[in-house]
Length: 398
Image 1 (cartoon, rainbow, N blue to C red):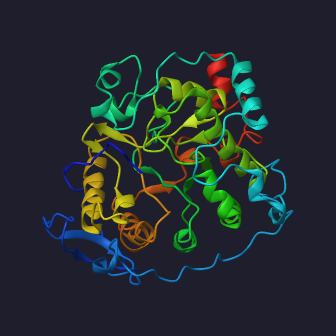
Image 2 (cartoon, rainbow, N blue to C red):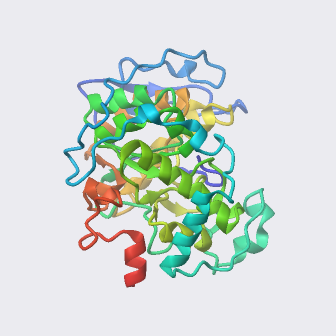
């Protein structure tokens, strides 16, 4: 979910038709403001796609699909050498975690230990004051401070950040904010197309849907941290950031047996203070591709659900992204979501089929693999610290 960024038009990339799915134009209202868009040409769509006219904020809830299978406790992730067997989540007790979707308390024994963990690394946390609610307009001085390196307002990145894939035509596929009720629908489509993704998961959702997380992991998708309660991190104090990352990191390990070493800040809201804390906790920041303040690889699919955008505008954003792909010599990372029904429907019905029919073809993969690492390198316990050191080790060595 992007708080500040928008996407502008560039030259559309050429596309190829797909023998497996229909191709053609889709038309309709661009937004709740009744402005219209030209028909959008897609190289391919899913024959079973929900009609675009039905993908609206007020749409009726459709039946969710069950997980194709349920991993058993003790199952071995043979695709990651040295990974422990899956934990038994039948004993997972929500009462052992903070209240769902609320900022975690900062005085718990767990948070105190994570504070000490950060201190032991010796990484200096910059003395940067938290921002206030309201984004860039409400934080003019912070937005103008180049030393802060606030991505939201300036697009500033550091060497620790991943925002693209090195190789042209590589797409680091990502979905944020789940697991949710409709994540199995997305997983079914990804399975059918043999696609793997990175899922940036919210700790509160993991407590609700631990079996979905286990299925994602055992299906060889990359799992990464997206905080506990999805608050803008630059607005939080140091200890609040530690609590948000720590509890999400912990519940993922409790469910999978391994700890992710990547994170995505909600809304892409990161500055040097948030970066330093993330790296000190062993988490590499991953954002999404941004070419200018107005040109970001954000579909804005999240906002169909709340009525702030339309599915037609999301598809136009997607076509703009394709046009921008043709102007860069690297791969790219796109922001999408799996929390809501509407986002999953536009992904499985339209965006992914169109991407699969793209010519030249994309190489679609998790972020860890798009940057040249194995899935083993995505977790602290199984990472090859010598070949691909985690962010913490790299920072201390540098």
